[in-house]
Image (cartoon, rainbow, N blue to C red; front, top):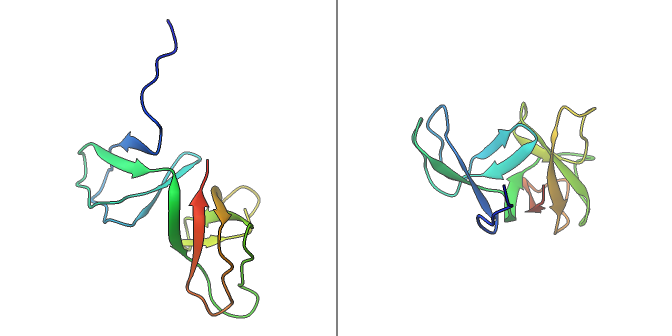
Length: 112
């Protein structure tokens, strides 16, 4: 079999097991993506795996994130953070803009 080009890879197909709202972070194995639209359970959907998005982050003292920092998605807390917690959090990408302690979001470029 030859290797055949399929598409650029900015989004991948997936089938959610439950309804998913636009802007949801979805973890598929070690792959992290974002839904751009609402999707119904059991129906073919698209998951963005490239691009720049604002992700929720923790706030408070010590929660600032520097530009260029590696980010991981904490599925349990539903936030982006700089700690992979011994592999429990999945690699998300890198921050493209610094986020202060008081900021509720960090801007990140997805990269898998």
